[in-house]
Amino acid sequence: MAILTLLDPVQKTINNPADIKDFMNERGIIFEQWEASMPLKNDDSQETILKAYEHELGPYMKSHGYINADVINVHKDTPNIEMIRAKFLSEHTHSEDEVRFFVDGEGSFYFHLQERKEVFKLLCQKGDFISVPQNVTHWFDLAPTYFVKAIRVFQTPEGWVASYTNSNIDKKYIP
Image 1 (cartoon, rainbow, N blue to C red):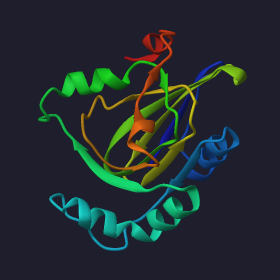
Image 2 (cartoon, rainbow, N blue to C red):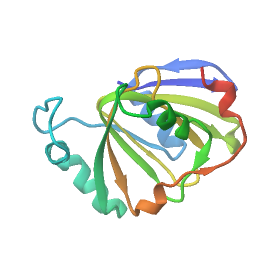
Image 3 (tube, one colour):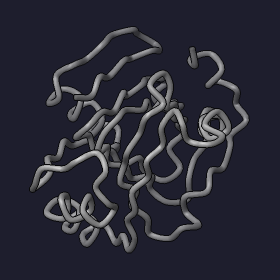
C-alpha cells in the first residue's frame, strides 16, 4: 500500500489509498491499485506476470496508446545496483508518460511541482500503479530495500530517456 509524504511547503503523511488517489489525480498523476487475476510466485516469468495483470493493463494500454510492456526485476544482488540507483536520483522529465505498476517490492517517486510550489514523495509498493505525465519533474529512489519488480509501459522506447533538469533540488530530499 502506498504512502504519500508531503515535504514542502507543508509536511504531512497520507496513508489512505482514496486520499492518495485524490491528491495525485488532482495533480494530473494517475494513481490506482491493481490486483492480479491469479496467484503469482517469485520466479514467475515476464509473460506470466503480464498475463496476471492483462485485465487491468490491456484496457489501460489501449485507451492511452501504449504499444509495449515489460517487467523489470531489480534487487540488491543486481550488478551495478548503485549505478542503477544513481541514474534516477537526479530530477528529470520524460517526453512521454512514465508508467509503472509495482508487482512486488517498493520505490519512491519524488515530485517537484514548480507551479504549485510543492515537493512530495509517493512510496509505491506491491499493487500500486502510477502514471507520471510527460514533462512532470520527478526523481526515483529504490533505496532502502533495493527491490523493485515492476511492469513498465511505453509508447516508444525513446520516450523513456531522462532529460535532467540540473536543478539539484533532489539533493535536499534524498536521505
